[in-house]
Image (cartoon, rainbow, N blue to C red):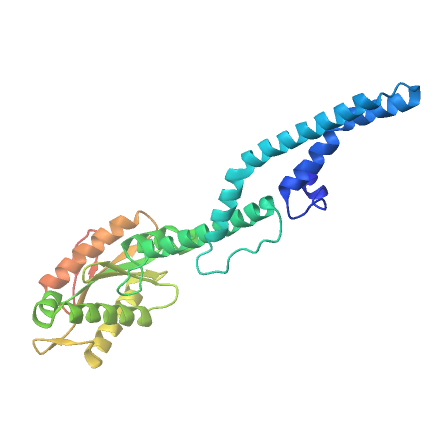
Amino acid sequence: MQFYLATSFIFPRSLRLRLFAVCFVATHLPLLCYIGWGAATGRLALAEVVTLTLATVAGTGLALYGIGALLTPIHALADTLSAQSGDSAPLPRVGDVIQNLYAGVQRAAVLTRAQIDDLAVAAHEDPLTGVANRRGFLAGIEALPTGQRKGCVALIDIDFFKQVNDLMGHDEGDRVLAAFADRLASQVRRADLVARWGGEEFAIFFCNSVEEEASWALARIAEQMRREPIGRVNGRIISFSAGLSRWSGGPVEEALAAADGALYDAKQAGRDRVCRARASLSATCP
């Protein structure tokens, strides 16, 4: 790299001509030495000098042709990378092929990183509601620092959601899901995590919350659903059932299983309510 930069003043826009200059000087060193020796000793033969000069020039030209042929794939690669700029302007031709290739590789690396970031977001976000999906929820839990790996987890199910789709159509069902996700996300703290668990089921992680706090938060959301309903089905305000479980930093799957059991009990008890799971995995409902 240092030699490349040091010789960049020689034909800065053409690597091929720069290579020719370097090769020409290097291959003519023996001839220059011979001319110097011949001039110093008086044994210089003009015919030999001319013959050697022509031979070295021909050899340099042949070497340059071979180098140029070997560089053809690099030129093609540089042109391809320069063209792969997405919506951005093409790379300017400000230097030789090495500079263009280096700039193209940098541009490709930036675009690849952006695509990887977009894919990571898509893999962890529910496209319909804009909240995290199941994978994103678990990844968010896994990424928590040690001091925040405790609180409560809740699994929430929209009551009689199948009737929304059956009686009002899937477009209305999608609207209800998006509205419900927005309602949940707007009513929890920034430290909490809301996700669409699957279908009409959602999950919330209440960071560093005790059961009373998390239960009160869910009750507040349920009351707002009654005051400002996101929709009705069969004349009934759309409500939700929830199961709540403590999480003390162990495997979160255990707390989720307990919350799922409590959610089942909430449905069995008549829906539109929150049930808490106990350490014995039995549930209590209001």
